[in-house]
Amino acid sequence: MGLIVTDDWLAAEFDLPAVAPATGPFPGRHFLATWAHHRLSAAAQPAIVSDGAGLIPLIRDGDLWSFAGEPDLTDYHSPLGSGIVSLARRLPELTGTGARLVLDSLPKEAAAGLANGLAAAGLHPRVGRHQVAAVVDLTGGWDDFLDRLGKKNRHELFRKGRRFHDRVGPAVLEAHERPDSALPEFVRLHRMSIGEKGSFLTESLEAMFHDVATGPGWQVDLLLYDGGIAAAALAYSDPTGYYLYNSGYDPALAEASPGISLVAALLERSARAGLPRLDLLKGDEPYKFRLGAHARPLYRLEAET
Image (cartoon, rainbow, N blue to C red):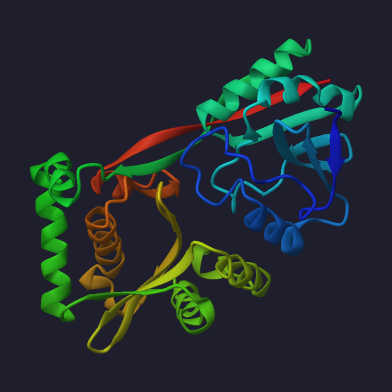
């Protein structure tokens, strides 16, 4: 089949499996089309490349070619389909000479397939570490998770749960699969955050988050107590796991550890529901690893044509 390039998100064949497993919503049509609608600069244009067996959602900005979805908002990048090596081999036909490929946020499976294809085309791809995602293994259920957590971290998790209960009251986790009522609470709490996080959620990003949350699999989870809402999470869930995209909590309750209490409640609910993982996504913040996460390396691939 010939090489197909389109800027039409609806026309492109996104119903192919991601090359890298357990990458949540990020390689899919809904997330990337929503991102492009809200975030794509006037100087850049989509170039969704496919050949029937594989698909790579790219953005072209002059001579620079990159994955759709800026890395600060898109935790995983992955091509789709089984024919990614042969498709990557044909990318120089599209880019021509003098182009730069900078492909970030790649799990190892995606990085390897792209690198092999570009090398087969005669290029010299360079693959280096980019960031890490933090993933909690929940296979075996809640009791197995607690065993793997270890005595020290398990004690700390329970201690913070008791602190929340003693200072605030019983915690109740409430899931909202429609964003209309719960998303404003997430936005409100997120904007109460201290430092750079508090100014991160601009009106433009709020609009993007709202549209993202209307897609299948997205939900807002609220941690409730007798006096109101302690914390909130915007997340995506499917059979591969629960992907915690962003969260916020009421800083007036900081001494009660509402943020950790929220994640602990999400971990228990996900484990008891039989989900194999809870993905805390990009970032190597220490609290993630005290909650039992392991680091999933992400790579950046660069090449010139």
